[in-house]
Image 1 (cartoon, rainbow over the protein chains, first blue to last red):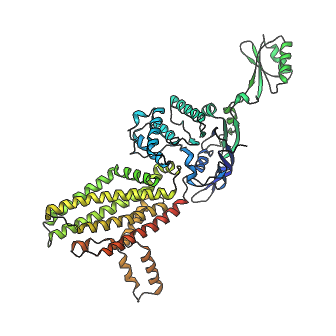
Image 2: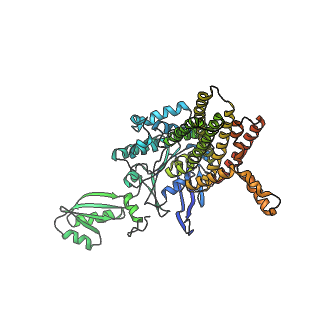
Amino acid sequence: MTTPLIELQAVSKTFRSNWTFRPLHAVADLSLAVMPGEVYGLIGRNGSGKTTTFKMLVGLLRPTKGKVLWNGTPLSEPSQRQTIGFSPEQPYFYDYLTVFETLNFYGQLYGMPTRARHKRIDELLASFHLEPKRKARMRTLSKGNMQRVAVAQAIMHRPRLAILDEPMSGLDPAGRKEIRDMIGQLKNDETTVLFSSHVLSDAEAVCDRVAILMQGALQEVVTIDTANQPPEGFKIVAMTSGDGPLRQLQAAGLTARPLPPDRVEVSVREQAQIFDAIAALQGLGAGVESVNPVHQSLEDRFLHYVPKDGSASD
Amino acid sequence: MKVFAIALNTGREAIRNKILYSIMLFACLVTGIAGSFGSVSIGDRMKFVKDFSLFSISMFGVVTTVVLGVSLLSKELEKRTIYNLLSKPVARWQFLVGKFIGMWTVLILMMGLMTAALFLLLFALEGRFDWQVLAAIAAMILELGVLLAVALFFSTIVVTPVLGGLFTVAAFIAGRSSPWLLYFTRNDQPPFVRALINVIYAILPHLDRFWVADRVVSGHPLPAGYYVDLVIYGVAYSGVLMVLSMVIFRRREFV
């Protein structure tokens, strides 16, 4: 069995208020395993524990309970982060450094030799369209360019695991696509990617698996490979005339709804029910046009865990 | 290499900071003014010029050390640049040592420039270089190293830079006047007061030892052995403070 590249075993993080010492459970008993080469997403509302989880992975916070394993061994020493890249949620850099100096500095912290560092900086500046900004001071950059530098410094040393906290925030649609493509490229290069996003379509587009977090607790791990996933149900569309067939289908206990113009849609949960539904439709003189499997979207799954009163937000 | 990279980055940031230039320009101006004041002083003109200039250089060095020293950590925390840095394979001690070396190097450069300005002034007034002044400056540089370690230590235990700055200034004043504490260890004091004062005296940085300008200016230079002792004391005191800072900083979390 393959060992997960990074694994959280029943990890909890509790903060205490400065004055009242009241506990705040930022992450509660979280267990997840990210396999080598996989793109793994963490989604959740603000305050759901995504950033706290990432900070525990990169040593900025210590878990109150539980273990973080890197390749099967406890992750505790800074040297173990040699093959991990991290881009924080809000990219903050040294104002007075230029883009080149910033990337060079982080490359030095990863212990990259000078020549390899400079070569890699050239590659990254080209692929992130930052070449014209090479000598620009960080404080003069737009939010989008700042985000690009943040991601670039995280993958500067070609890490085995890239942890990207909200890498697409602040980017325009073209910039978001650029980051999505870059994540795809990282996957092709067998780099494992763990990232968080508020934009579910982005997560759906690039992730192999997505963990849904709510109030620090794991709700569900969703596999995004829809082609190999069993469908949630099936929808049959048939051509009818008038309301008669619809009422008769409903009277027969089938879930049916009108689909203008002159069509009905029948929903069934099991594959075996398809034939009964088709027979019923044909019995009413309706011509079956299509039968399609229904996959629940990531958004549907996510919204399932969001309380209707919105109490899960911070 | 990582320590060197952090030191270089710290130095680069400090050098590009306009505050540093303002302080240095002001220091050079004050040194220049000392030259003109010398002509109206009573007694030995050159003694006054050297005395005033060395005092100015020392004070500007101390102010810069306190201002930049306490902001070393607080600025990283406030701007959150520390998140990116410490998520890399960098040990907390490497971060602190890098910051210390970077900032001390900047202070040495700054002191070097102010010394150059003083030497030019002295050459213009005396027509020769007084190399003994260098001994006083070297002792000041050592003192700034100790004070920087004090500032860094307080930065690791307090939350705000203002508080860190106040503690550092208090430590500087107490350190420069530490011999006065021994007055309270006379035999007419209760034993526990004497014991307490002795402990406080031992803990405080003996910064008065680094002020050798009076001896240099009055033409009574100290023996080389004194400077060797000074180096040993400065390195040991800063070293202990740095280790304490590392122990505290190692436990720190970044929410």
